[in-house]
Image (cartoon, rainbow, N blue to C red; front, side, top):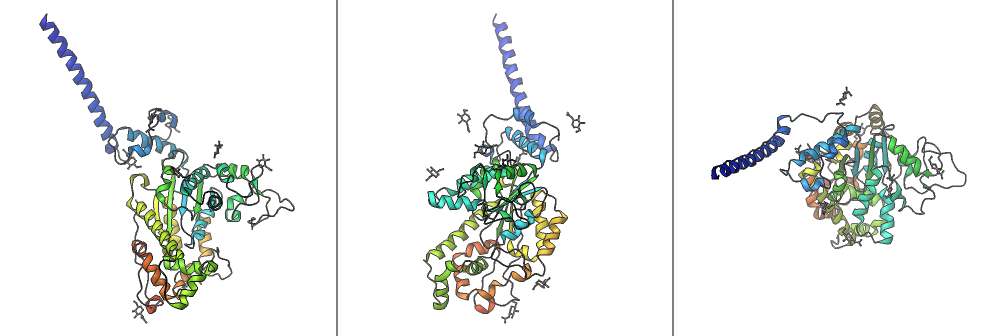
Length: 432
Ligand SMILES: *[C@@H]1O[C@H](CO)[C@@H](O)[C@H](O)[C@H]1NC(C)=O
Ligand SMILES: *[C@@H]1O[C@H](CO)[C@@H](O)[C@H](O)[C@H]1NC(C)=O
Ligand SMILES: *[C@@H]1O[C@H](CO)[C@@H](O)[C@H](O)[C@H]1NC(C)=O
Ligand SMILES: *[C@@H]1O[C@H](CO)[C@@H](O)[C@H](O)[C@H]1NC(C)=O
Ligand SMILES: *[C@@H]1O[C@H](CO)[C@@H](O)[C@H](O)[C@H]1NC(C)=O
Ligand SMILES: *[C@@H]1O[C@H](CO)[C@@H](O)[C@H](O)[C@H]1NC(C)=O
Ligand SMILES: *[C@@H]1O[C@H](CO)[C@@H](O)[C@H](O)[C@H]1NC(C)=O
Ligand SMILES: *[C@@H]1O[C@H](CO)[C@@H](O)[C@H](O)[C@H]1NC(C)=O
């Protein structure tokens, strides 16, 4: 009798062991599979829905990071890749601050007419309305939500920030509409309506007020989407965009020597810098002035975003690129090609042609947002317009930012205006 029980028990134990071992084996093979075939890409015709079935119902990608041992992770990555490989659609976000040449760099993408839907500074409306309603509290969350919707070609949320509110999804008030080729071409360009004044009207040809329904349809038809903004302050706030499986987002952060930015702002927005002009005469710069604090705040947020990006956390792998305006000005073609390579979008002859045309001789262009200039000539111009004491002040409040990006300090006026002395350290920002 006893023996019978013993045999039975041994049998059960054996079963349990075998089962466990099976589990271990399958887990081990789970771990080994991706290593054995590092180059394996998902089958192009595996349907996304089938793969999704294996997905945990509510696991967010953020839970799985950093480097979790969870075998589910592979499935997650796999799922995401399959969806993304399917259409190859890319979502480019060009992050900059004012006077960093972002209009110019935005054109690299805007000029890819045909398969690119490009929006110029849509958050302008959001910033204005939030400033009035909430004083700008939690703006970053709203910015992110609007960007997410725009990348999906849904203008509903943006519309709610436009003043006056669009009627039947039609507006004559979209900020800088003319800077988006996609909003000025057929069929988004509708016949002109008499007596409707549109401040930011299309320049190439006259169009009726903007119909967002048509814009959305056009956006959906284009392969890629790009948005330029100078309003996002923290890269980290955009993480949910990366985690949205409907999007394949790439961030390009554009930076520029803060001394040059200040010099440029003082010319473009001179009314804001009346005080500063005064200090320029007095010689003394009050370090606790509001404008100085603002400058410091800007430098800090740019640096903090760049530090996040350059650290390459798992969620940003292959999604972040840092570019210095000065490098673009000196090597526009090479840098544009790099940006396209990073974006995973073919660099078209159309874009090349535009760059050739717009980085060489031309004194025709004017206006504060002008993009047409001899860019390599422009790059050092500020050194002769900024008073040395202001350059020094910038070095004081933006020091760590300047160091990070490789902008050299100057200790006297002669060095500032010595053209043979480069203010640019050669720096390569790796992002693979
Ligand atoms: C995968 O796609 C190829 C070509 O598109 C097709 O020949 C093949 O039958 C497909 N395989 C499956 C499993 O659907
Ligand atoms: C997953 O869903 C369950 C119930 O639907 C919920 O209680 C839990 O908080 C969710 N987990 C996460 C990480 O969202
Ligand atoms: C999953 O993706 C993350 C980031 O996208 C990557 O670091 C990781 O190596 C991937 N894991 C596997 C098993 O492919
Ligand atoms: C700002 O966002 C935080 C977290 O999302 C929330 O707790 C807070 O109530 C928000 N504040 C306002 C004024 O909306
Ligand atoms: C667009 O976004 C709004 C909310 O912002 C949502 O209510 C609406 O369903 C979305 N439209 C589509 C077509 O997804
Ligand atoms: C906007 O375009 C849509 C799609 O073609 C059209 O149905 C709608 O009538 C247009 N709206 C106006 C006000 O013209
Ligand atoms: C642009 O400026 C650079 C530097 O001053 C100069 O060498 C170059 O000849 C200029 N290009 C044209 C086309 O004027
Ligand atoms: C300008 O800078 C160059 C390179 O650093 C240096 O050789 C030269 O002496 C400087 N000229 C003057 C006038 O300081």
